[in-house]
Length: 279
Ligand code: HEC
Ligand code: HEC
Image (tube, rainbow, N blue to C red):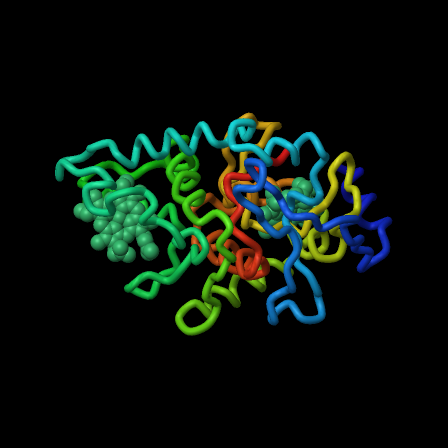
């Protein structure tokens, strides 16, 4: 860990390195094409001109796995999520499909998550899923980081693949967005590093064996080869804060919801890519 500290400090401030190419991600031989670079949203003026998919920063083997749904190890979990979608559970005797019909009805949902609910609270997709389970199905809530939850968020995300991320940051979302923004620039841990120190000041640089991306979330949930499992956004945030040797927040905490909104808004315009593959 000391090496992370040394590396980041030894790099000059604002040393970001642009990716060599910004080819689109061409999936299933051309069936789906996802741009990997789009103009940065207005609120990032001064920080970024372009925002980039994390896919650009991965090695070619990892990239290749995302080019074919049969090779993408995350897709099996999408299938499991779809099975769950159609499974009756709970006292009300309903499945997700009983009310929402086909899972294609979730098209567009991932692109606007997290979003403020009717009561004015910021909810992640996980919260919407558990609300339906507990209040509409009389079934048990799923663990935030459990396999069934990740399978379901993956299955729902894929329905929006290719749609530009478009989270709302004004109106009732504004205070949450401000909170998330403040977190993004707060230095955490013994290493005193903010998200921005790595993902804004040093994207494109190498940190240990890792090629730093802009830390975008449009690919989530991601399949991580290192963990051989799907990884949720909040779990990734936790890992990044841990790497600063900091005390981290809980998955499903209000802090991480606010951070999720802010980070998502940095990627507004990038296509929903999930399920993507990362090392
Ligand atoms: C008894 C009917 C019912 C069942 C069963 C049900 N839902 Fe819902 N769901 C709703 C209603 C009503 C809403 C709110 C109105 C809307 O946005 O469609 C909603 C909203 C949602 C949303 C938020 C959509 C958005 O655009 O804001 C998600 C995600 C969702 N449901 C997922 C699920 C999943 C996953 C299951 C199964 C585990 C499920 N629902 C089961 C009725 C149901
Ligand atoms: C010490 C540097 C460092 C800090 C500080 C840091 N990260 Fe990361 N982060 C990484 C590395 C390394 C990776 C893996 C390579 C990559 O995708 O950038 C990563 C990956 C990510 C990813 C996954 C991107 C993708 O496309 O898969 C997200 C999202 C992310 N970080 C968000 C954050 C947030 C939010 C914070 C602040 C709470 C943060 N990071 C702080 C180093 C850092």
